[in-house]
Image 1 (cartoon, rainbow, N blue to C red):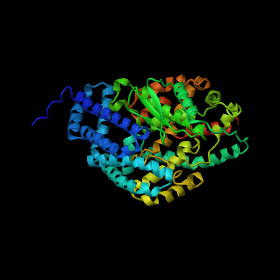
Image 2: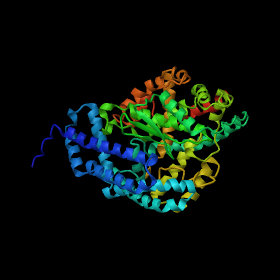
Image 3: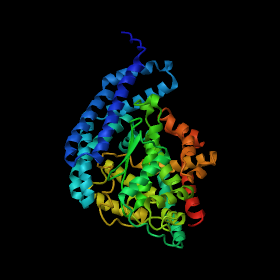
Image 4: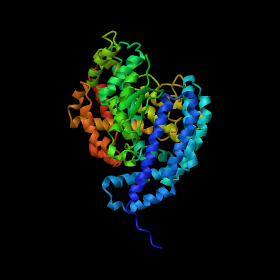
Length: 507
């Protein structure tokens, strides 16, 4: 029997299938956003069922035999497609491979358990209660391991490598391991050198308590400075700051307010505003298409850390921020002077929370989680042993021991959400952000002076066509090389840290 000729609309039918799944994913993200912002606590079990239903329908759509048949037809006519369409088809095949690898029952179980576990995590963290978290987390981990094993077999990767590939195609263990080894080796002595220098600085004046309402007002002003407009975005509060992808024209992000620490909400707002700008600038003509999505987690994190750490902690931006803090917060003008804000912003922290860490020690927090995650997926670390293993590795890499579980192994929501293989992007994103920002400021010397006016437009003029508008229409390595002229490596990040923390004048 001869093989039937491919139908001319095979690609169009594949597009219909995968964009429908994209819209369902966007709806799921909105349900997840509501679950962490406005949903009554008692709704967690029902939200878990709703998320499981969406997962089941999406698995049927893009992981089915029918989807594979459509992709095979479309691939047979790929020579007649334009380059962006071929890129879209390539991404469809990648999504199908992940969706088809793991049985649908495992995927729905993951969605159901993780949604409920996130609500349990909120209380467990607040109460330093690992026991209440451990039992349902162990149940989730069984499912995660089975999914990882199924994907590893289908994709020809290690189980943990398969989990990374789901979130970060093109950024595998072979790329991560040498970069993390370099940072684990080079950052601790750099931290010691910076601490010795900062010991000679005058102590900064304390900011004192700042009402949530004042911090929220400043967050809105900063989001507007970055480039967000009221008709397209909103900010809410959540226990763990995050932004919502996949909803063009409706970008939502959250921050967390602490009356004793206004610095946190400022940096969290800049961070999430960076994520949201990436989403907002993705090509609208490919909305809900696989190739219209952001190019993986590390690329996404580079866009948030570019604003939070590279731009948001720069001397230039602080000359804009300090008067804005004085205007919004009021009180003693000396507290909000540029010199005092600069002094406070540049201090290495002595804390235990990743999202509050200074930019020098930040990657070490991530490297620690990377090692723990690999051990959990491999079965070399049990759930019961997580607290002790966390404290031991934290002491080894960062030099101190968390005083509580809430500041230790319960601080992040990611494991409750089933996000295994996701953590590496936080450090890889920091390395990538430095490489982008170094090249951007060399290409356009007006970027830094503009930040002194609170003007992010020159930076986005550089990054938008090189990263945002290219979405997933090309691969990770090509995006990096095209934008910076070199493959991803740790040297720009280390140069940035030495310039900022050892060579720039003290406050």
